[in-house]
Length: 579
Image (cartoon, rainbow, N blue to C red):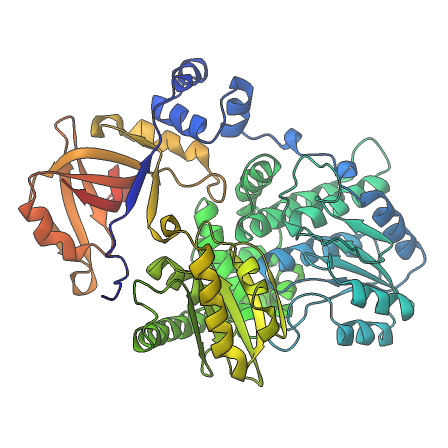
């Protein structure tokens, strides 16, 4: 029997009430629901809870505490003084793009001779490469500063040293046992640092902050540097949210303040991309960054060259920024178009080769028509559909390039490493990875991965799970309470969107199919304490079953729905369980 995406019954895990929530609610004068959400996120001390719902910039960690920052600042100051050409070498994703922009702005302000280099996603791949280092040497570069990459670039750093280039590594990815022979390595994992989960943009911002401190003439930085630091906070927030790092502690402070400042940013590129995304005049939250702005910035690297996105964030020409932003919007539209096409094709291929069989533990598929810059996004969606680790490989070039995504509890990098004999190159982490492979080795690789999954992928990892914050009555979801839940923003990794559940509800009127082809479902429910309207996206097929059920349980996200000048509480249904 083949699996149908979305048809498996989801397993609910409901967090039990915690008595500590009552004390938080009383002392902070917040609702019991918000207090319970804080406790669920391991925030139980009063001061910690107060800082959580009202993050303060004073809570940012001083840049001098970042491991390796002192020698990095010394070398950069020397390069500025001696007018040595500096190249900032970044990654092509949003974290890398924002990291480059942060350092470029400050070094330019300080009068440095600085340029930036972003490798091409398809032609060069991630990180430092020999050809790029050689070209930078020919161009006269004397100092390379990597951002969001470089911690494993031992060979490339040695080459740079041989060519007379000093290298400063700034990165946040997992270091290996051996480190590059760089003049400085700025990395939150190399020593005990309070925020080990810093994004690459945060590391770059700390270098810039430390440099700004070096150039201040009084107890405070001058107005120009102060404005730069505000812009840097916004860029670091965008990189942090887009890179899906843990949004607690310092990351939460940065993301929170950066989101507040993003609409007031003086950078023409930020203004242009907000306008292009049709978000002008709105208060932006983590959703807008992750799903509206970040995909546009990422489209440059996925569909062409990410250098264009860096130009957007560094140019002082309003006209040029508007041109780039509109181009990125179009590139993102084309990316979405190709993504839908690849997704549909991949589903057909999975069914054709029998990889959707319930006994199958992994999925490895390949095709020459797939764009290698897009397959990672599609692999993530397929992993959600089939609850299996998925590796998609584009064989458009002589060497196949693949993106892997995994399920909770299955370390995909270890799985891939067990099949290394079939691969040219691979890298990544527990939940996502990349591979390079000769086309003829793909079947053997797929077989080896399936064998590893058979031995190491537990059955519980193949079950769709929903983690529910708390059970509640509908009468608890008043407008003030739902509005108050916004204090949890920014939401993301480590601070997920709140999910509630109510048992034993029933419809007070027949549900109604809405949307294209009746894909979605509108309904109004009651639990005898209150009545609330709901929307179930993609749940149109459940209309008949709901009509036939006396009662059912719903898991949902509450939100304020604004319509025709009025606002009311609406529930966005995540799942329905029938009694």
